[in-house]
Image (cartoon, rainbow, N blue to C red; front, side, top):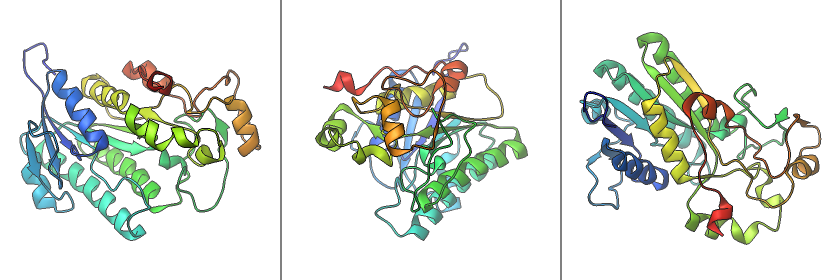
Amino acid sequence: MIGKEGIVMNVIVTGGSGHTGKAVFDHLIGHGYDATIVDIVRPENDYAPYKLCDLADFGQAIDVLRGAEAIVHLAAIPRPTNHPNHVVFRTNVLATYNVFEAAAALGIERVVYASSISVTGYPFYEKFFEPQYVPIDEAHPPAPQDAYALSKHIGEEIAQAFVRRTGMIAISLRLPWIHTPETFQEEIVPYRDDPKFGASNLWLYVDARDVAQAFRLCLETNLQGYHDFYIGAPDTFMDIDSVELVKSFYPNTEIRPGFNGTQSLISSSRAEHLLGYRAENTWRGYL
């Protein structure tokens, strides 16, 4: 971002070669940021400044993060389905700890962390349970079961610990299933006629461009200390009424007043109020 003094903020985007990282990087570049990708995989966009790094190695983390003014931390194993549980947990937690430890050592005062709706326990739970209420907001208690959800929940605890230690600004964005118009067509459209398909995921999604917007807003906010926010689309990816979906699959869940239509089962209202976040892209525009 080009601030009042004309200074371009130097931002490191960890995991910037991935599906979401590319969207975040491109968005930041488009808004005047001086951004660099840090990843173990080289980005497809050859124009992107890039540093190879395994963030599980603290020495490497210190080296590649030196000189940054802020960090967007996306690097992680993104789900618990393709790796052993202990690898998912160890990799994600250690990388997050190293990023915050390096930020503290280097005097980097702002880290925006890619958390997940998985802190609620969905969608990778092993034992079925129901949300306490919908729409889920930041006051809803976390209930992780699987290694990925645990790693994201502990990542939030790490962020809070470093805020207490250093006074840095740390923001966790709890993100649902992230899509582009292309991935939505490939991964969701063929199954939208069957509500069981998305039940464990609470029928949640968000456009990658809106995720990128949310990360930028976190870099620009005047909020101090630690904050966490749910970031999502305003609707589910179903045409079925959301109350009907909840009653069918989660009959013991409290339905809060005002919950209606095809409204999302998570609330982004806190992010809207404190960050100025507004989802600008929904699946209806894709189709």
